[in-house]
Image 1 (cartoon, rainbow, N blue to C red):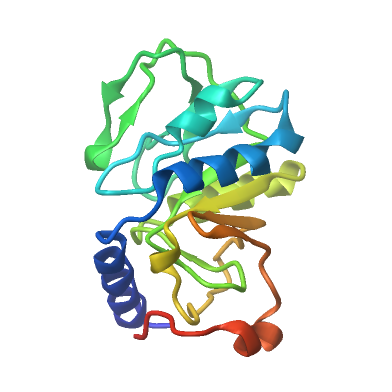
Image 2 (cartoon, one colour):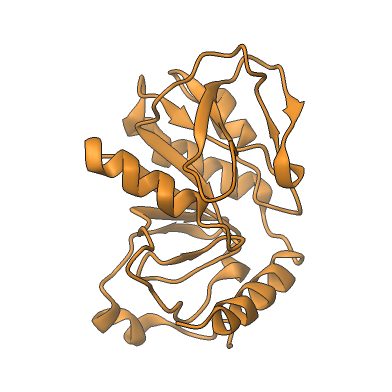
Length: 194
């Protein structure tokens, strides 16, 4: 699928994200979704550019928490333990310093530009999470939980062979269990259009 189609969908989703949503509800839903993962290594992220904020749920998590680090172009993310210290990273990110221990997450909260009900996601186009999830899932089961405002939902995102699906999507309006593409159409309602 051409980068132009995904780029257009990404812009529409990011424009919708500017509307925001109910942050308190988003946090409640995420905390509830993480409860079964108590004790597991959780990878969150430090929000930027209006992203849905996972930090309150990360603080409530009973287990190790880490943040992603971009180590270079076209490379999987590295995850460092978060102890409150941050330094600036590539692409405007913030991450723990180099002396923080590297952890292997079992559960990842994944930032989204957009998502659909089949569990497809739009990131920022660098493929970092797809590469990372592919590598982690090749070793053992890993849960990928997308976090976004409900207004970021897109009717359908074209999937490519390298795209890694989300296991769960948390929005301010509730929890979405991804459904196979063939059953998507029945319950879609009005969503972002390409």
